Each structure stands twice: as structure tokens, then as C-alpha cells.
Image (cartoon, rainbow, N blue to C red; front, side):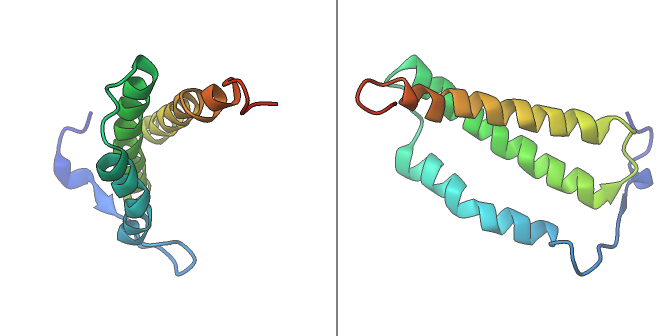
Length: 108
């Protein structure tokens, strides 16, 4: 961990990289739809796990965006957060699309 928070510096991005807040704002409609329109799915274990994974995914996604934007973190921070993000994305897929394809009449 960091011994002093003053070691963290914000990197200057070139014009080809999106701003941190732009990335966050662009993802807000999806998060709003899932959280406020669909809500926390407590009607079944799959829906409940999917809801929790979605919340964790959004938090890890935002943390990764901030870590990419700042510097001063230990060397393995970005790969660990990126791996967590990928793992959460796969778990979300398993509890949504993969599950849906197994429903009779929907899948191949």
C-alpha cells in the first residue's frame, strides 16, 4: 500500500484518450436502468447474484478508470483490478446471457 497519499499524481491525458468523467457519465444510463428500472432481483438466486455482481462490476469499473487516470499505485494494482473486472464481467454473462440461452424455447 502507499505510505503517503501525496505520491498519487494525476496523469495528463492526450486528446485521443477520453476524460475520466466522460467515461463515467456515458455508462450512467446502463447503471441507472439496471439499478432503478430492474431493481435488486430478490425473486430467485440467479437474479440476486446477478444484481450483486452488477453493483460490484460498476464499482470495480470506476476504480479501474480512476487507476488508469492516476499514477503512484503499486505495479500490480492495474492488472489485479483489470482481472477482477474481467472476472466480474464473465460472472455477469454467466448469470444473464448464458442462462438465457439455456431456457427452453429461447436457446438454439
